[in-house]
Length: 114
Image (cartoon, rainbow, N blue to C red; front, side):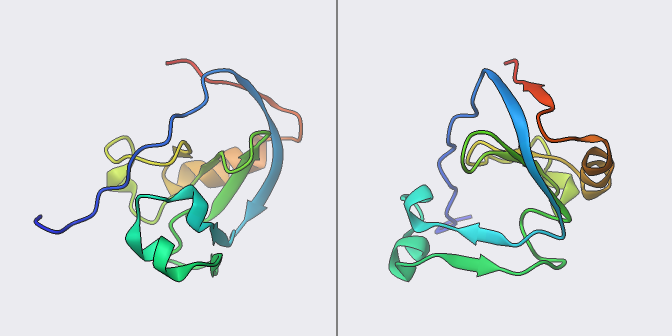
């Protein structure tokens, strides 16, 4: 669509990582410095916290990795899994995020292969 903003993709890390933290019903902490290409984020000039709920972009679960800002998370729009760019996270359907949340433990090795 004309005028629609498409975020630039941040490269997903291609290495071994480890699960560090997990959260059910996560808040999203939007840091403007992570989204330099989004004019709205720059105009905001401060961290924005989006509370848990049906419109939260990280869905119902967050599994944080040992690299700041990277994780596996759900989405309220499962039809976009594998079809939209991200800032390096792994987006899965909410029902898969809930399952992963139950199975993951702190220190779980995560290997990213291209």
